[in-house]
Length: 521
Image: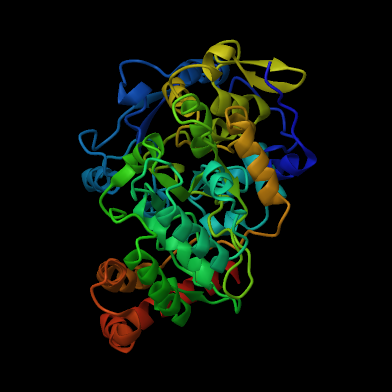
């Protein structure tokens, strides 16, 4: 049996999902009660396995038995994977189901909730949802983060668990072959990447190594943190961030970004960064590691650590391991990416719902100990067993060719309902090298504060919608052009900033800060 003993360090990271849950009063209703639901998320368009609403999730079958609440699919936009389009289609009908759930519902729910489309949950939770209420008490600040501009909150979010998501990974076997140490700072990293480029660490006699690569092109931007710039303030790429002065700003309008981008463009020109970083796509990790070409990346702990076992016997001595973020030019060691404690995903109660008390009690069930285990691990006895007080996946789940998270999606676990994620779910299928890396990262003060978003009033939303999309498009266009060598950011900087101002950047920052101060005080 796998060793599931968690260190004290790891237990600290899972504290958010280990409250003393209040007992749920079950069943919620004496006779079965059907509630309709719109559930649209990346993996499924509809409330059923893979979007197949003719079949119930195994998790839903148990939830029905326990609560007597039966969710019935009524998802709009089943022919599109664009959640915004699906939500717009739903709202345009004016005929809302009882529950609206899924991916990135916060913005439309907070926009239309104060106008009457969704039910405020503050009083309902206080009076009928003891588990959710206790969660807010144990995790101050999160309720404020999901609140609309009127001070009410209108949805129960999906609440991720754990600290670290992505990490820096390096070919330790290449370092060993070249007699190099793991780079401790940005200058040493440069020397390592040059050595990967020039000294044939894969031993095939060709200069074909790709020193730095990334399957998500945005991850190349993380290199800019090594020159003390920021690339995002949350787990969403290109997001705003909170400055040390407590103000909202955007990383791509700061002088640190200018200086970091100049260095990033230099590294790209010198061949230290994958020449196909913007076009290779999500298969780059599989290809470049599988072909013994890739040297360093920034990617998820759990999935990236699996390549050591996947390529064992195929590449002699292959050893791709996490290492501490190199210190920046200013001597700062930081990991910009982290698991955000609260997502814009989850579910809400619409004005059409004639059973809001029963519905909030149903939402509360997923925060009880029993419901949380069901939402995280699937059906007890089917996918997992309780062993010595710990939920342990069955061997057939852990040893399947299908990733554990993909298996859980089909079970109805780990889907985008409102529930508290339990990091023990992921820890079990995280390779030992990644576990060691997580504990290594946890030994240093690496994490930075996160921007949890703001809720606009109508006027603020209009300003944001009018200016921000075109501003961000311009930022990203210039960003890629500079990296690829079209233009010089240092020479272009003044005109770039002037263009941002003409496009309304200052207006966007103003409404962002107004909303932020109102929401968080």
